[in-house]
Image (cartoon, rainbow, N blue to C red; front, side, top):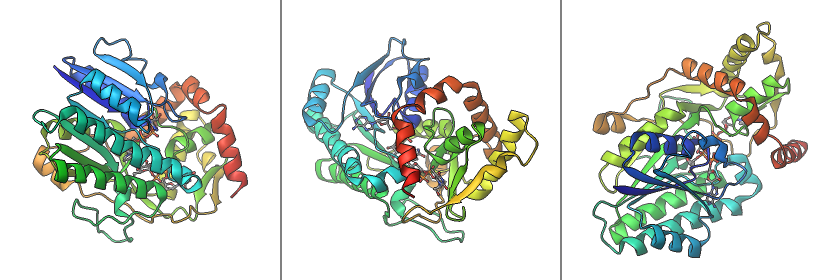
Length: 351
Ligand code: NAD
Ligand code: DAU
């Protein structure tokens, strides 16, 4: 019997990780700790919330006293840490929130784990889920990020994630804590909050609203289906050596404009609109400040060491994703009402 704390389990990737662990390992107890910010939604977990091995705890990782008490009460064997502020544009508008959650929150968890495990890391593990954005940006060539690429973050978000990665490594090197880190590329799929490029565009196309493309749309991202990420986390959690780092990616690079043109075609087909209708909504807007040009992940180490590879072709994954959003209108309407609307109206007026 293992008791695992999953942080940020009500968010996009976290909900897929919780679902996978609850459905795959009925002998584990899964505790999902989430503050339920605008990005966290318990509706993402309706299908597993009744499972006897699952428990939800509402709380803030920035609150050290609360976190220490939770570790004392629950006596966790392992942590899979996903809770974070995750949107680059919000980090540009409000960096301090990112320092608090992503840096201070991570160190609070490391401290609580250290106090709880008291130097005995046998069968204990702290798994930190991070991003490829810590590596900075690539040029237009064929170079990729490997686990040896030097950190060079540019946005407040990526700087906060880089800092948290350094703290996790420091706890491994200084205290001998069993820590592992993975750095993943851009995820897409169901339950993705519609402030990020793909779900925002799906929602806007559906509602006949402009699709904002930053700059000329020439920035390149490497897209991975979220369930493939959750499977990679499962494999790394169970098999990685202590102190190791793995890059996770889709070998699937797209310029933003090509991706959105492809999405527009899928949406025209699904909505029964004449081809070319949705593409008319593409609107070029002011570029993101400090916008990284290109991310590309070399996931060879993960394939060679642990046998993981992406399972889904992007075109198939994109269709599945569109189908999910069109079939889950209520979810989309719920998460796009209230504070979310106001945030976006203000942001676009200020551009
Ligand atoms: P998300 O924004 O969808 O979810 C984050 C979750 O964390 C939400 O449920 C939120 O309520 C919770 N949370 C935020 N602040 C908290 C706090 N102070 N205390 C407790 N809970 C809090 O994020 P996501 O896209 O699912 O990303 C999850 C993790 O994966 C993050 O660490 C992110 O950096 C990393 N990551 C994301 C991507 C991606 O493409 N989305 C890629 C690589 C890595
Ligand atoms: O690479 C992994 C990262 O991917 C994660 O660590 C982050 O948490 C996640 O948000 C994502 O970051 P990006 O900034 O790459 O994702 P986003 O969806 O915000 O933007 C993708 C690209 O699309 C980027 O080049 C900016 C651009 N963009 C984004 C939005 C929201 C637009 O052109 N228009 C938009 O409206």
